[in-house]
Amino acid sequence: MRTIDWIPADDAEREPGRGFIRLVDQTLLPDSLVELDIHDLDVLVDAIQRLAVRGAPALGVAGALGVALAAQNLPADLARQAIAELREARPTAVNLAYGVDTALAALERGGALAALEAALRVRDADIAACVAMAERGTDALTRLIPDRAALTVLTICNTGALAAVEHGTALGVVAKLHRDGRLVRAIACETRPLLQGARLTAWELGRMGASYDVIVDSAAAITLARGGVDAVLVGADRIAANGDTANKIGTFAVALAAARAGVPFLVVAPETTIDPATPNGDAIEIEDRGGAEVRFFRGVRVTPPDATALNPAFDVTPADLITAIVTDARVIDVVAGDTPASDTPAARPVAAETTE
Ligand SMILES: CSC[C@H]1O[C@H](OP(=O)(O)O)[C@H](O)[C@@H]1O
Image 1 (cartoon, helix red, strand yellow):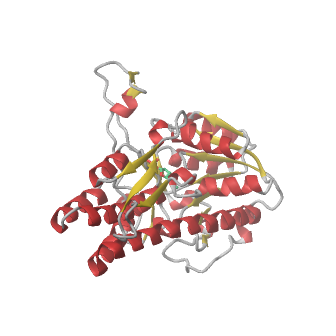
Image 2 (tube, rainbow, N blue to C red; image 1 turned 135 degrees about the vertical axis):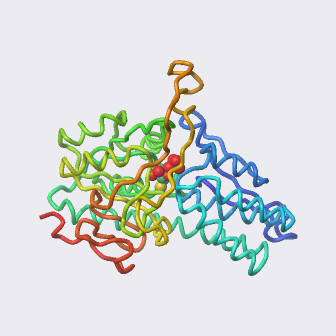
Image 3 (cartoon, rainbow, N blue to C red; image 1 turned 45 degrees about the horizontal axis):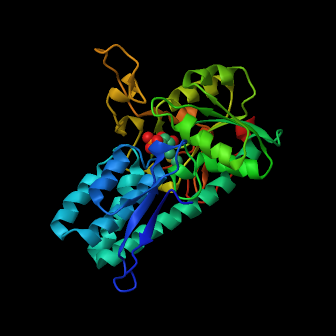
């Protein structure tokens, strides 16, 4: 099953490049697995904004395929406007803009078919990147925690195949640990208010047959303080040049607790999530999703009628709380002082000294 993909139209032989986007509607999980066929860009933008499709890598693919969809269905001037709205559908994950810009450059160079071909390359690159990150991430854990063959890991939000195309980022590392017989247990923070952890990560862990517990987000600190968690693995939506990392709200608090508990904190994200144009975390725009997601739970109001709520969808973990950033091309040894900007993109093992 792919979280998002391009489906060629029946007459694609006659009209190469025609097709539509098919994606899993994640708002219906874990109760129903439903795929949406999307033929119009405004429907795709709505799917992004209501998190039917979500997760930085999946947003990159959605952005790229959205350009291909616009190019085949809209006249150039309307396509340009629709693509601009698509690019701004959610501001924090740099991957969305990356995907749109990659396919748009191809469209301007070579037309609609070139845009689709570029979008399919973005899709295929994500699949390959997640495979590489799973390998690199488990190797990094072996170097960081050489005395423990099997690990208990904690994560927040959802970073599995549902956040990408076929395999996940941080949860892709967890899945490989499980396949290799090296996973004792996964602990998934529920991830209020939209419950990506309780709904999506738990669903993915169950499907792979992994042992896991869901915890409320505020239990992460004591879970780490009590001991028994060997590593924290999280995703990212935008990584600044200095290594500051934007990720789901609650990640910063988990990083603080991990640092106090002496537990390695690893960010797992493709190179496309690194944004060299963003110097540090202060420059990352944090999506505010409005108070209703906090004041209501599955349509039931949980606050007084006149309550107001704050709802930042992401926070920023400063680089000094991150042990390493694992990408598809390298392991950035942040605790040793490396940053995305300073580290060469060659594969670099996490230095042994990080365990001293
Ligand atoms: C594999 S990165 C997924 C990343 O995206 C999530 O945000 P959202 O569910 O709002 O799209 C979260 O930050 C995850 O870490």
